[in-house]
Image (spheres, rainbow, N blue to C red):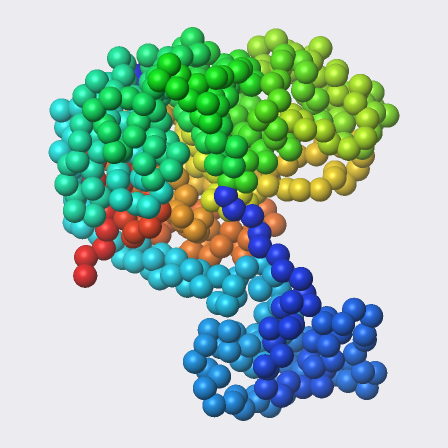
Amino acid sequence: MLSRGRGGGSRGRGSLRCCPVGGAVAGAQTLPRLSGYAQAQAQAQARPGMSAPRGEAEVPPAGICGGPAAPAPASPAGMEATPLAASLKAAAGGGGLFRWLRGRCLGRSAAVDPARDTFRAMTGLYSSIQPADSVYLSTRTHGAVFNLEYSPDGSVLTVACEQTEVLLFDPISSKHIKTLSEAHEDCVNNIRFLDNRLFATCSDDTTIALWDLRKLNTKVCTLHGHTSWVKNIEYDTNTRLLVTSGFDGNVIIWDTNRCTEDGCPHKKFFHTRFLMRMRLTPDCSKMLISTSSGYLLILHDLDLNKSLEVGSYPILRARRTTSSSDTTSTSSSGPRAVGSPCHQNDSGPLSEKHMSRSSQREGGSPRNSLEVLTPEVPGERDRGNCITSLQLHPKGWATLLRCSSNTDDQEWTCVYEFQEGAPVRPVSPRCSLRLTHCIEEANVGRGYIKELCFSPDGRMISSPHGYGIRLLGFDTQCSELVDCLPKEAGPLQEIRSLYSHNDVVLTTKFSPTHCQIASGCLSGRVSLYQPKF
């Protein structure tokens, strides 16, 4: 059941870095003596069309293709001093040259991504945090905490409160900076930083406010356009477009390039019934929208400059199951166009007459093509569910959902991997999401949304769990998602549980720059967790 619950508590970037293989091998020219097979393969990669010598291709060395072991080469003096040399030495010894090249193409070698080792160390620190390490911020008189947001440089922590206020803290010293006592006329639901000084807030008073950290006495401007509670804010840093969504079912685009004291030019971009949350992928190529009716909508090849009137978007794909008559009737319209979802009716986010427009499109995927999914949720196969919280992996690899049953007796945290490419059979619907990990949550605080989040490197999840939070990983070593993808959905692993609140935790957030986690609860307390040295 849906309940008012006040504000955000009511029910209601990155891409893979690829480098040319030739460039990777060029960096390996300082390798000490590799075996003949490895040298030939490196030359073949550097010069297309060149093959390995005949006599050596049949007996590869150990660590590359499983052949007999080759003696470890001696490194020139001083070579071990650089991360690149260490990576090359590992490749020549036991790691395998091809494995090293693949890791470099994926942006995982020490020479390509030195920060990777930094985040690995930070993950070790997170797992060592104790509940006694928490620091409490004085927010008890401001109502429930619905949202927490750090500035991009980690120097400011903002708190969205139930009683119309926004609090600002220094997360390093835990000192209070400022209280925006009348930020809105109703509870504040979400905060989003546009850069290190500008941030936006939204509220149940149907407005969005822009603020400048250098002048907090007054708002930069107030944006009017929604007709119901505004629940979340996204921002496209490339086009400087602000994107908001609310319980009126509207997604609205605001052009901050032409912002004045009276507001910003805006347009309605999308509309659907039962809208709960809206997110943009880090590269702004997709928009995901969750609904209280259990649907997940994905707009592919996103173009925010193009308004989408009702029925104007092409429906390329369908939910998990389709009837045979649906798939047969649409197979002639192209390999990527599929039939309407079975049991679809006017109570869903889209109607049948809008679905039929997909059969009018031919060729490749157009901009803003819409996919309608009902994500698989453990234990909810025969019952409806509500997608209450929606987050995206910082590298755009996956989406994170918090789902609850319509009867409020179960709650799950689920991770879905994005799948690209055409469907296996032209007549079968293409599903862009695949359930990879999940875990059942404590079913407390019914009627309130629990906002979870990824860590900055995407290897950990912080999830509200009763009167505290749980740190979850894809495996016990907190590996990258792409390194531990199971063939079938597996459980998320609990790394650490931190319980320090006296009420239900509603929101949690990782610091983007420091080893710190913030959590806020229903009674208004904010806790900061960080290791003590």
